[in-house]
Figure 1 (tube, rainbow, N blue to C red):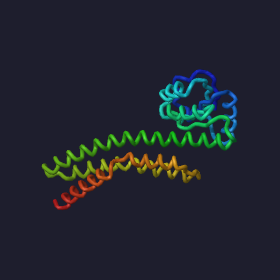
Figure 2 (cartoon, helix red, strand yellow):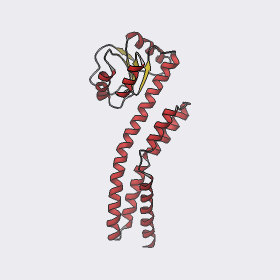
Figure 3 (spheres, rainbow, N blue to C red):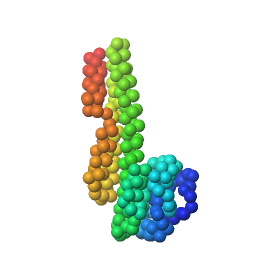
Figure 4 (cartoon, helix red, strand yellow):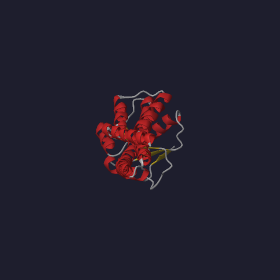
Length: 220
């Protein structure tokens, strides 16, 4: 772990968690608290004196999806940090070591959920393309009496549409194995993540296409 008062590095893709703090004293306290509980070699603590609206977008652009926590001097700065790219915030001074540890845990957890949502948005776009392609090919396959191709494409589309649910199951397993509780906000985040799949009617349409294609194959 490092406690750095220098300008933000141009590229630190290997850093696991980024924590921005308002003072060197805050950085020292957080570093000491986390060192007692975590393997924090890949954690970067940086002292900043810029507003969250200025420093966070710049850092987020450089570190991509890495977990990013912000230690704020007051509630106003905390809300500003959340709206400009921080995964989690901690209003300083912290109540105790448990508050600091909880802040660190939530930063990593929410970054994981955010990355899952981003991946699933991309998967949803891909699934929509597969669905459109599957519908097109199903029509063509019907004309050329080749339902096997329609069935294969429909299966691929269904697998893509199930990605959000499998990611939610993975996150729940992680929480359970580590003994973490879930706040209402975290439950809502998982619910929203699950909804990034295709609408129910589209999934039913794909299953119907698969049934038609498999029936045609069976009767051929």
